Amino acid sequence: MKKALLLIASGLIALSAGAQERSISVSANPLQNSYDYRAVKEAINQRAATTAAKSTADDRWFSYVDYFDLNETAFSSSIALAAPYLWKDTMAVMAYSSASGGTIWQHNRTVSLGLVADLAYSGFNNFDYFPGLMNITSSSTYAVDSIRFFGRYGFNPTKTSVVDTLRVAFVYGNGDASADIYRANTTNPTVLANYGLASTDTLKNHRMRFDSTTTRANGATVIVKDILLDNTRWGDTLSNGTFVGELSIGATAAGVSIPANNMIGASLTFISGDPTFVAHDTVFGSTLGYKYNMFRPYVGYKGTTSTPQFATYSPTDRNNGMFKTLPDTTLGWGGQFIPMWFWSASGGASTSQYPYIDFHVKCAACGVITDLGNVNDVAQITRIEAYPNPANGTVFVPFTVSVASDVTVTLSNMLGQVIATTTFANTKNGKAEFNTANLPTGIYTYTVSAKGKKSTGRIAVAN
View 1 (tube, rainbow, N blue to C red):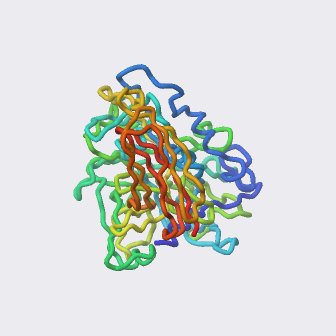
View 2 (spheres, one colour; view 1 turned 135 degrees about the vertical axis):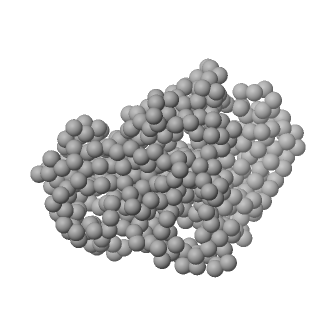
View 3 (cartoon, rainbow, N blue to C red; view 1 turned 45 degrees about the vertical axis):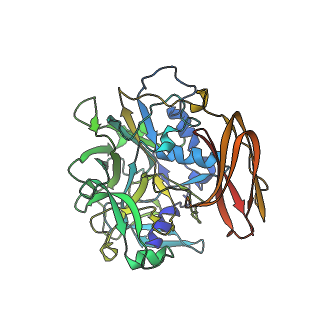
């Protein structure tokens, strides 16, 4: 399990000058050196520039990778992109980066990638990031009419007559045990040991069902769409080599109606149309280039390409990335996608990884995201960075609020557990002091709360 996760995260392979993705040349390390996916966000104009002065929302693209990046950037952190290999079965050989920095050759195991999105999650409704955009709540009924995803379509220039297929499957569910997107618990001792947890612990997440025959998401709500990749599709590539796939779902332009309190999900599967492929042949290598055409979807995660890091998460965040490997029945993953992160009953966590899949949403009855600080009886909090950072013994959290208020300042660990709390009565200014001498080295969050308004930051403790 851990090995599979690391292979996903370290799937960035240097490309030779002879390797081609669409009709452009790529640098030695395209995703880290010549490609910053924030340019994609600007190109597709997903964020609102100003607050909309209206009560009914326009249609909106929901992208968890965008939110993940914006949130990390706000805390002076960052995320990276990997481009794992997709192949419909285990018969293809790929070049992977080894832990020692070299190259290892292995049969492909990743046959599909997927993402579950909870549009009512608070991060999607953050005014600092998405002012004036559609506000989805747990009671909202909405419609999804399109899916968009990003990646690289690598091809052999001598095989332009080959027509490959990207299979996209869309599902939705409310997390119940019988739903197509459901809450799952993992108690397998091998998986628990991989995350350094006791055999009595439980790992939890939300995931999609898997169809082993078609290697895609499955269920009663599933809608399957194919994109044919041939010469006529090469125009879908941005100037930096990024392939942008977009397709409509649903029988009409109205899209697919999603009941309240449901999550939505999609999977990507690449199906080679090359009749010359020979089982156990090498599909891609750093010096070989692309012997056969293939698709490499983008996956956003926190950390470097070789060392994935733990990212902030919460059990209330039902957004989840996932992949599917074969064979995987020994750990009990036969009929389900494997999550790219868990939360634990005792607080353990894995790395967070999210395929770059976006959903276009319509909601005639939905309002827009507004700034609660514009309401007279809500105190505006001036964000002041805690100091010193990193802390060694003591950390101070100063604050200023616009209206005299009862203020609470908390210090929490990355599992959301409150370590210390300080309160102030009817004040506009103050400074909380926390003793960090006995805290384990790591990252912590501090939160200032006043009259329904919150301001949160991160602090490093180095003891």
